[in-house]
View 1 (spheres, rainbow, N blue to C red):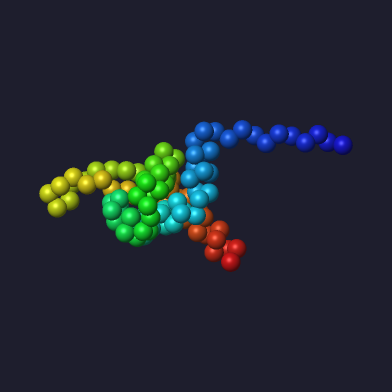
View 2 (cartoon, rainbow, N blue to C red):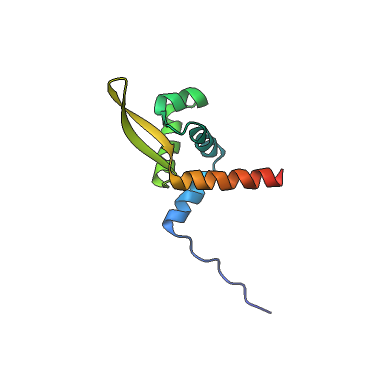
Length: 105
């Protein structure tokens, strides 16, 4: 009988990505950011999701730590604002996941 092998270790970066996309709320945030390629502010995201601000903040921090989402500052309406948008990796991952979801439904 062949010995069962231990699964390979997952890198820290891969672990963060898997943790980030494993939550349906974070996936929905990524989908919303994918629809708004110019980026959304925290308050815009809070309006879309009607979430507790602490919960939304935690989701966004994990998404940015996993490099799926970028947090950037931009001057709009004569003031600097913080915005979130999908990173290139986030865009590719979201597109791949959408294709998988379409194929399985």
